[in-house]
Image 1 (cartoon, rainbow, N blue to C red):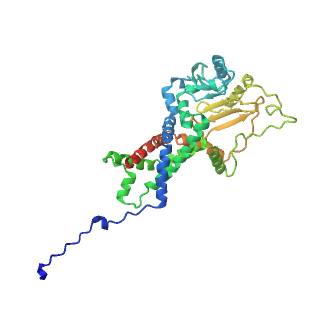
Image 2 (cartoon, helix red, strand yellow):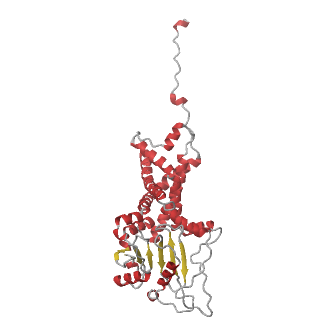
Image 3 (tube, helix red, strand yellow):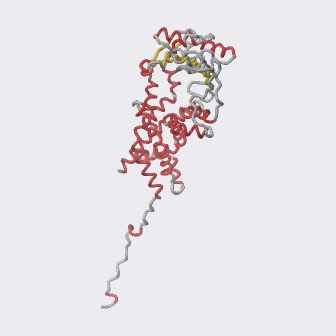
Length: 402
């Protein structure tokens, strides 16, 4: 057979799959982060949604109260506050209370609040015009909308011994998912395409893409604020965490609950610390001691009309009188409290404040978003809304891939 008669060989066609490079597997750290992010997020998702939505409502609690509850505001017409004993007397007589827990002057154009916490079944807030003594409203605490929201935020409307740890440890898990989410968000290489995918939501994409971008991009933008809200919230839910924060901020001091120096009394002390037999709270409330403290404050030229002034009544046999001045409702930074012994009204010396004491007040303002005024409240509100959306968008990402 001639060479010309031989069939020409077929060209070798390589399949694309044969030359395609095998996709490089992600690192073990990335895979562990992805696994934790998925399953921890699924486990705590419902709790995070509830806590975030209730938190968003509570951010503007005071603003909403003023707007929706007419009894929150009054007109002063240049008058002076009535003394606390007058407001206490009105509340006790009209609602047949054995005592009151405090008298709170909320500010120049706000009603005063007289809370009663003596009987859990009758916890209530009594709103009184501080200039005329007229009762404006009485709200049972169990029926107060914002109190109900707070119960959901704090313990999911469950008994506190069950709800509190569920919320606290779900918050801890949420913080872990935020950190693992950052690991998943971080691109392998920074290119124009990865930057766009990491920082922008492609609104022109399909529903799946918009959902993914919403989870990925919004989660990144709110990461730092969400961490602050979560960590500061854990201070109120975990005693061991609160003690650790205080210990660190104070430079090695353990948490102090009552740091008053007890008066020195000769002989046995079977009373309230000053040698006199302790009496019942309702008897203490008839002595007019709060008016003496009130008059001393007015005489000192303290501007009590542009601050929140609270007279806390003694609790128990050894509890002191508490007089507090705060810059505004819902803020603890700048709050100053002074304590006085029952009967004698002797000012009790208190151990100097340390970093732990100051940070605990700052912790509250950070958690409720009031630390920087209205602007930081808006940031806290938006962060809460986005945090509520993350478990939902994350669930749909998982469901589509499943």
